[in-house]
Image 1 (cartoon, helix red, strand yellow):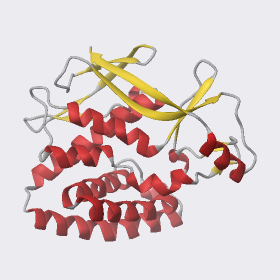
Image 2 (tube, one colour):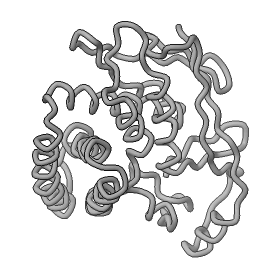
Image 3 (cartoon, one colour):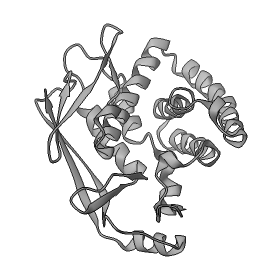
Image 4 (tube, helix red, strand yellow):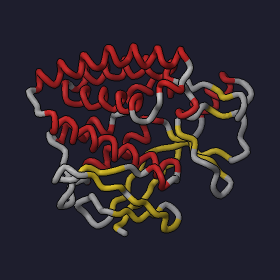
Length: 255
């Protein structure tokens, strides 16, 4: 779950798989001259749009943060909670879609635990969960890369594309332009993405990675009054199941 800070008296709750749909829409539109392109495009686009499949079960029964009275933001949960979920998510991807999507989703989990976290600064139970995840996923990744017969640079490029579309989606969902990430370029370099808010639900992006001159991405989210708080987890879960959803739409334009 992503908790967007309140704006105009309301707060948005965006499930992780819903945020991932924005990544998939970006990947489908990706391909301006000079930028690395997904290859194979269909499988990479699918992986981008499903990169948070690991969170499906948690999102059906989110846990309550007693301090805030809201569902836990995914950043508030430790690796001991979500590393086992990543294992199951990769298994589901492998069974449902085959090697390329499963490999890229697995690599995205590895990126989270090696680049977005510092295991040495985490509690022992989180460190243990990360080690267990790495032992399993490293072996699977090596096996699947060998079976695909792909080049390391192709795997790295596709993984980086999933990562940058994830970062851009998170930046939009959190309304935090500093999260925009870096894009892989055709020549092997990377470019830092600069996202600037231009108004309500409108952002400029530099450099511009998409084929068309603007892109609007959409997902579904739960919109709450900003003062909403819960004191009981089961009540929160019931209320969330019964709430109406609304469309989050964000438009990107070149700088």
